[in-house]
Length: 302
Image (cartoon, rainbow, N blue to C red; front, top):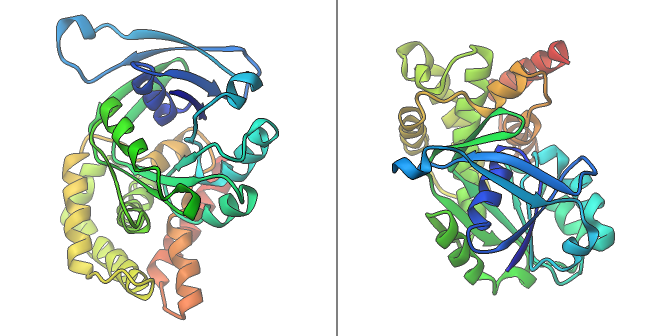
């Protein structure tokens, strides 16, 4: 297969390096360079794989975009509309589009901009880190879920199988909104708190953060139930605690965005909870407070 990956951040390069093992991969980036080169360190522990692998991939070539069998968008949630507009002139209406980012809320834009394309959403717990602009490290293995959000994409389950061969584990989900909500809960709990307190994920296991984590999970659970996904604050808190433990040495993406004076995805994470609360007339005061605090940090950092 021939893939175009839009966005050459840590996750985009992780999927590029993984898919390139058996497929043709073309990158679409914000630069006009016809080739994108980066070093990639995998998690494979054998001695032959310890040295980073140098990948040189074609980039920003409209003809290769036109020929792609699948396009994978790995940009930030607030960049989805701009990314779609950038590739749309060369995009076939039959080409499947996979969108992968933290948070929720970009689906309406994707469906409106691409009314004919098969559109899929993915959520992943695979972890990658970009210590330098041209160097990407695969830092953790996690579940990827893939699923359709429009009828045209319903028959593309085999795409999940292909992703699983290249970067396991990946599975098809018949209702992709469910894992998206699960991931949103984890992001709502971990990202704002680690950003406000400038700490690693593992520090949230400290007793002083437990009340905040429980309150976040309570508010999110109410919203999820209103959306039709029955859950409890206790079950969400258990999931959050497992991720805190599993990613104890990691800095959250939001933490890193603020440290590097970049825009965060807070509007599509905590902000999405607040907007849903307004829609359902459900109070979400703690998430609203976190949202405003991160927005203030963004403004100061810009």
